[in-house]
Length: 562
Ligand code: ADP
Ligand code: ZN
Image 1: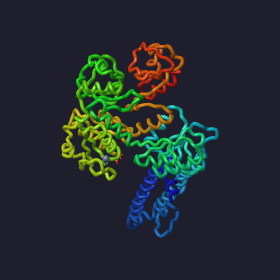
Image 2 (image 1 turned 180 degrees about the vertical axis):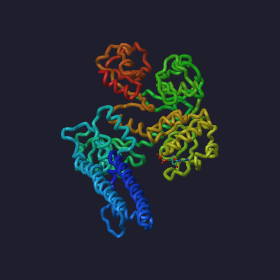
Image 3 (image 1 turned 90 degrees about the horizontal axis):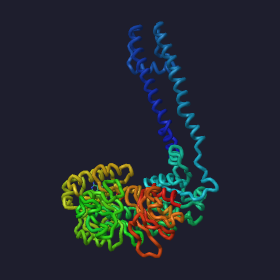
Image 4 (image 1 turned 90 degrees about the vertical axis):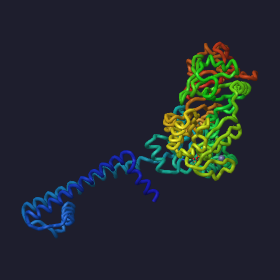
């Protein structure tokens, strides 16, 4: 049954689908001709022979004559009648017995047979292949990863037990696919897992465990897997996974750090040793409307502003950059520097209030993170979360204004929109922006293509599940430590190459060559990194550069800085 369905599905794809439209048009034409002949028959019989026939009988006559069956129970008895019957027979032969079968064979049967003969699921990864990535399970995360792998020229193979998916990926998308169940040793051998760079198991926890156990019985290639439920991580690790990524938990944390407005330490995204990277909204601080030089943040706190975000676009600031109300600064510094900023602004995390719409796994993880700061928050969901006994949510549909008002939308300073429905997320963003124009809105995009719409709806920050997931996977694959800021920006490390030894940052032309900016210099024996070094800082080979830039700019570093 499944095979029949798969074969039938062939007729709904690509050229076959176009041909199907031609067939439908042709059948409509045949139907029109039959009806036209039936009315002519009725008319001629009445006029020539004075006999009356119903329309059903007329259609019956036309079909028996067109198909050359000719039962002979109804016949004309006059020359004009015979002529008409001849015309119907000849058009029947041409349209029904010649053109229709010919069309069926050339438009459907021949291409289908050709397709069947041509498509053989790839036998396996070619001998001698190594360093490839094996992907088991396609979803928006692995699809985004594939685009990155293609951009970096890293070979990858997709394993799928679904014949239809194998054909579609190979034929329509030009990917390299191995058809078969990746939890079978035979299939994994075809995929040459033993020489692979890594295996990504992304088919759901039970199937992933099977894949991991089989890979481990063959070799010790690196295995990375994504989990929705953090408590499943231990089983996957026990089975032999090297890296288990609790993506939803990480996403919750990402959303939470960005939705808080008070207290610099609550905004720390990540750290490179002693160096903390934080994103601080300008709104509500004493810096609103000031030029960066006049804000004197560096002089007063030691923190360096290395980037500014304005509704989805990132820029490297200079002395004249104006810190607008909706600007978010990316700052680097130590814990002491951030504390100094907190003292300067007099903000306290406890004075914040964040509203979270959606108490799924991501919303729950955001709430747990806010608990740890501690930042006060209110959760809203239309149902109670059966897996969470820690948080209590306001129950109700957040599309209702009364529910939002009951959840203090007018007093909240930050808002996290995290339902699994992007359409609803866009609606909440629009509605809440209207109800509270100054609220800081951080929204989750379940699909990459909705990121722009969420920004257009008024979100200050959009976190896309797919790109966060793909970035984490890529960082692990490339063995690098980097901090993912938001769509397309990251902080990363790069060792000073031998050729730059003795040069200064200016003469090494790092910015010109790569587009990325040096935000700090680390030296092995020096405890504290030099934050935002001046262009005349001298580089030496024992130093590591900490840079900020897009993934493309990072790739250019690898290309240009040897
Ligand atoms: P995840 O686990 O990925 O965070 P879920 O699908 O489990 O995603 O969670 C989405 C949550 O959003 C669910 O708990 C759902 O009840 C909630 N939700 C969806 N639409 C609305 C709405 N209109 N109002 C309130 N809550 C909503
Ligand atoms: Zn919870």
